[in-house]
Image 1 (tube, rainbow over the protein chains, first blue to last red):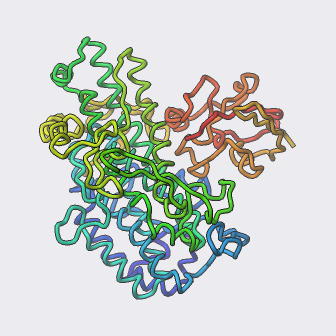
Image 2 (image 1 turned 120 degrees about the horizontal axis):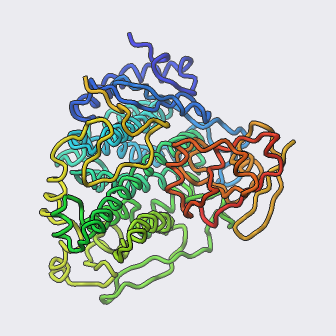
Image 3 (image 1 turned 90 degrees about the vertical axis):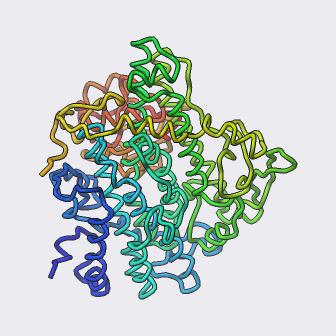
Length: 474
Length: 107
């Protein structure tokens, strides 16, 4: 018998919770089976220098040490409860925050939690082969840290399902381990989580763009009137911040290296840049276009009755809801969304409570633009004129008002035929993927060494040097 | 009790009494100072509590650890020589009167 109470760091009084204990006894072995099958490939004996959260206090994050990933202590943490917390928006505004699931919102809340929970194992599945082509031990350690933390996020959602949703919740928790990213018959729920992550540039783009969608979704759920969900999501945001750090600095280091080589060898054209074994800036732009656009789809339809219901019911708020100065009801407010009319992209105002997906997407776009500006500092410093740009938000979309339309990078409405002619100028072609993957044909694992296509980071993890043995292969 | 003066990007000042041992970030949140977000909760994983420390006080601070230096590289407003993360500045009596300027944006 496993001592779950000892094994799982938690602040949910696990030792006193018979229901949860029983549920864990059934779910935890299935989770480990999933990790062995779908977690990082052939990594189970590696000892990885990982951070483990052992409490919600700031120093509870500073626990670093070598861990075999299947033995990682996937803890369950909620932000401490604020007894005075209220529902801060919607028709229940001003009531005490709910500590149990309101019966009338049971189904909607379960759907929200399952949809969020499904993304966590999905990204681990998408990234499971990347350890075989890591550019350094530093990066290998980072992807493993991201993977175990996605696993912990799954635990966080499963805790809510088990604790608050009874038999339905247990069944949903099992299904989270049964769906598979990219599987034809039983795929993950959201599109971007069924796309392959075939190489490290895609991984860094994913953690910059798609994990940031996670941040915005978690932030909106951290405003929920259902207090356990809010407190869980608040804590998850800490880990999400680290994932975005990995993504932003990863892409930045690739750009930095490319700029260094371009400057040193005075080359500009993509073929000349590629001949020197680094990733040309044009290909990086195409990856950006792809990951940005598929991530924009994750926010859902521009006008959405589900989003309106979630808001008016107090289940899912806006980004920084409590910092916004308005009535938090949105009865009379309007918000602009875009649609294609007679071959043009036009704005139209709709009731703001129906446009909450669009508003969250716009908040996200503003933040992403800041990151792209930081990437462009590399080109500025190298004296290169190339700048990365975000495409129009209608570009390459499959969900919402732009779905079914062929929109250029600049927002021009094209015929499908005209769009296809430009497709591989805008998103990576099979040859682009092949080239990028050709650079990543094996692992770079010598202490302190980095692949030629990426600059070393400026600093190591937890004040360790860059030549630290971040992963021990056994 | 030592004081910290928070200066917004628009130039507005707020003086706050901060108990010794409390971080400059934490005191900002407790006192409703706009301009410090602290998205990661104060564990040096994001850069949304970035501040520019007044030069008079900068040398009185213990030097930044590598982790803080790394995270400062992704700050929304480009770091300057006196940039620090306020979650990593613990108040001491020697820092009484500390002036920190907040960037125009944190994310």
